Each structure stands twice: as structure tokens, then as C-alpha cells.
Image 1: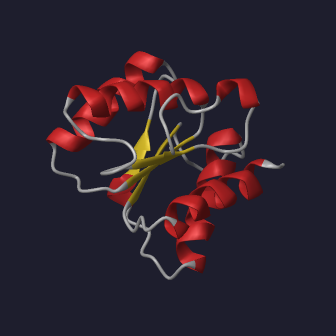
Image 2: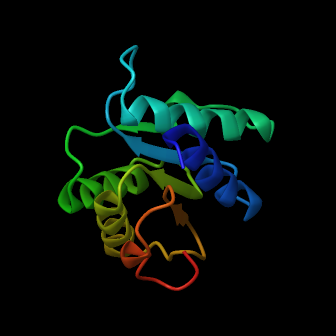
Length: 131
């Protein structure tokens, strides 16, 4: 599935489960066409299709796609009071970190925040129930 479509589907999955403030963790989004910009496009399209506002504060630009970076950013987002109920991230490695970071600050997945990713290798499935 192409990046834009996969991201739109993953973001729509969160919207269909009640999320209205969905953060995206991706690389820098600019004029260059790369995986992050394509996945951000799909994310943005899903929000717009659902009539949801695209809040620039919810686009979290990552310099590294590591578990450590994902965990750190998830903690920072919660501690800053950003206010989000869903997270779409562009890689499975970031997802593992996001889950760790949310757990570190006492946020329950999927009860308080839902996490989604583009279609990927089934072996990389989310390690918590009903992600």
C-alpha cells in the first residue's frame, strides 16, 4: 500500500475509534517528497476528510526514529499538556518507544490514547491489546 494511502487508513482507524486530536510523529515535513512528507499527507487528508482541524502543534518532527526518541517525545507531549487522544507514527520502532513513553507517565493505551501505524509486517504488531 503506498505511503499516502497507508497513512490515511491508519489515521482514519484512529478517527473511527473516537480520536479527535491525533498527533503524528514523523521526520521533517517540507517540500521534498520523502516517506515522512507522504505519510504526513495521508494523515492530513484523513483529518480533513473527517472535518477535523489540522493542528500544526500535533505534528511532531523527529530527528531520530528510535525507540528512545519515541519514548522521550511521548513523555514530552504528555508533560507539556499538548492534549491528544491518538498518535500516528511513521515507523514501528517509534511506536514501541511511544508505548513505553506513555506508560512511563501513566497514560493507558488504548483507554486514554490510541496508537496507530501504517500497514506493516505482521511480525511488528502492536504489543498491547487493542492498539
